[in-house]
Image 1 (cartoon, rainbow, N blue to C red):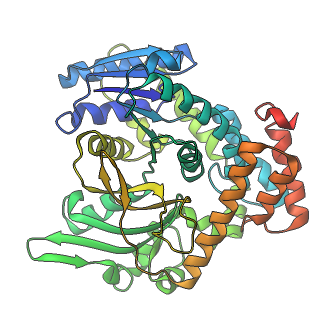
Image 2: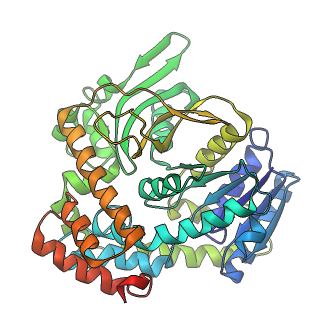
Image 3: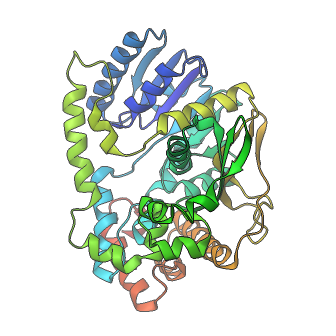
Length: 423
């Protein structure tokens, strides 16, 4: 199997390669191609990756290139992990919204919208190259944020694509540890949009049978459960579900904003972590992923990627939480919208599992954000100041005309070098 990683110079990549080495029986990869415009970074990452594979006794080879058409030639699967503008652009996403009293975050709110505007055109161009160069049945696995919007853009253009996020697998691993079972013994009732999800069931399978542990987590262990997602216990109890950490930006917006104004932006922290990592990657004696990589984010990314790639290429027919077309799963959303739910994975295609009816408050927030996402994708595809303002005004974290106008000015100024139509 040949796998191409677009954005292969990312400091995330050794996490992936570590997973490929550990789980080669699940996903037999013969060659990996790292595609990245930064020659130095892709060289450092590739050299470390080769040492890691050698240490693990993995027979696969690692190649590098700055040309996507070369790297994707005859690929069986292509993984997108792009960051258009790097940490510098991320810093802007996390700070410019503060000037309009909004949270700054790279996937949620005005910052996430800015990232979508920069990213969607680049990803679609890359996908067209993949369409021409890779095998006809090759899958694109999108880990590029904002995953929901980017994946929908890919699907609208007819690409064989699926979106991947590590939130669900993080919950699965957390509760497997809590209940003393293996991860495959935990099944989640996970529902929502990317970075807007709730766990409505935590099913643990043992020799005695299957039991939903959510009621216990919301009663006897309510304080610990709420603390794990940085939410108020009363809120979690009222929801009757465990919200993902990203919902804190909605349920505690002002609290988060006040914290952000007095803390260094995450981009600044990650940039320093990347500096340390790249220095370590350059050490010719290093042949394992450094412990500092855990602070980079993306926990369990490699396990999630290996699972979805293995299922897509070997037709295991298992269930994974993925970003896929709605197709009636959530009846209050259009069929072509992308949702994040448990999905049956087959080589021939993806089938989201049925979802029980959602409470009105959860349903309403999903619908609200989904309509913003549709306006955001329209702006990313077609440009124009009015489209930007309309999408911002529709976002539940903005929702005011003067604020949307101000954010439009700030966003376009911050991203002028990336948005050709804005100049």
